Image (cartoon, rainbow, N blue to C red; front, side, top):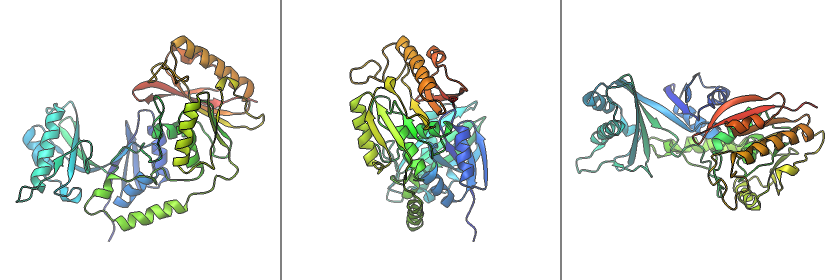
Length: 390
């Protein structure tokens, strides 16, 4: 008997949609469509497990479970009641509901969340009064209600914790870059996974680690658990076989070079802890070094990928964070100096830089530069990519 096809929506940060869509297509799902905020695709529950395990730039993978008209509270409750919630939540389980509403009669999202929660709880309540409880921090099931022009789409979260939580991070510095965004920057840089990978502003090591995971063909979800594992009908044996198959696909780093450096010794220490936790100590070389002294080997034809300091970075100007900027002028000077360094010392190199979208961006004078708008933690940024001529 053929497995049932479901509709899924893999969410992502603004600006990442094309990268995520390419990932989804590479996994070979039957049908996919890029939308604002993510990518729709069709597949089975096994495909959802694979998506969670392998997608590097997705934030969550949602599964559509209901779609109906909801012009008032009664229609919302009745529509939510048609979903077979026993598939996803045990009677004694913990539940959280999140809602969004656009151009709809039901525009109070807290009320929408309450009515959907009531429908779930009323369906699962036992005669002895046992029922699911609401727990926003430790929920077994996340339900998403999206109202648009009085049409409600209900989805369940297959991921659980957001997918940037890979499981390897033990240390983080000020304003760490989310792992999913780091993966997107690496992919946008055009790095071919064979050329040396250099990050002279490595911070806690996120970009280098994500690059090494790609280079070794390591599934980003191998070190974590997922929301679907708590579902009553979850096939744990099948998923363990899938995890074992993913582990078998990991390849040695070989002679490939991945290096991270930072002028802040404490940041380098944090990066080393994270690299060790990710099992990549043999794949990544770290050192304490000032980016102003960046002098890569001539003829390396490497790829330079970095998250440069910018204006609204958390902790800006605090002691112990020399990457943070106390003023816009300092960042402008840094951008101008670093672009000069790349032009002079990185000939033949590719680059991918996550930078501020402020006026200081104009000081980043690099040849063949392509700018892609990007949102990092609510801050407008640009990913600047290109090639430095020989």
